[in-house]
Length: 136
Image 1: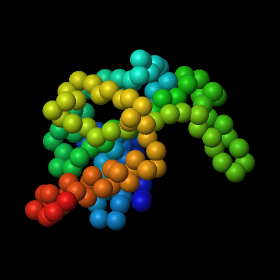
Image 2: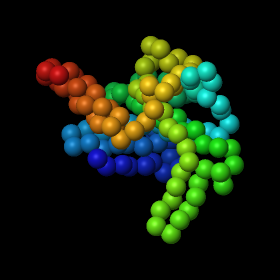
Image 3: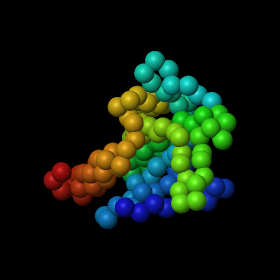
Image 4: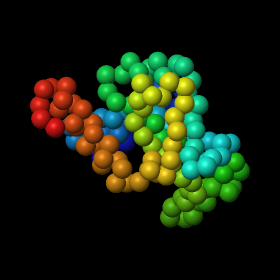
């Protein structure tokens, strides 16, 4: 799997990152916040109309990652000689234009892990197979 990040000043279809798998790439928007709180079993990300418009018009499925960090940088990032530790939690899911018109809800089921990225890869491959008329 590869990872390509857009320039911080570059807004390409409201997408920050492309995850590159062997046969296709997956557009991902990453939102990071130290201000929201995870409510009763869920976190809510308010969506800007421009994001919804761009993601809805994408020819590929778009995934959104929400990263929750403490509001004070020193509380969530720790530099060590051989690594950097990030004390944060990330949620991720596929944007659905029929459902996510103004916000996205994330729950523990949307907790991001390495295994989830392979699930996303499989979903992306299946999406392209259906578009080509192939079996999934």
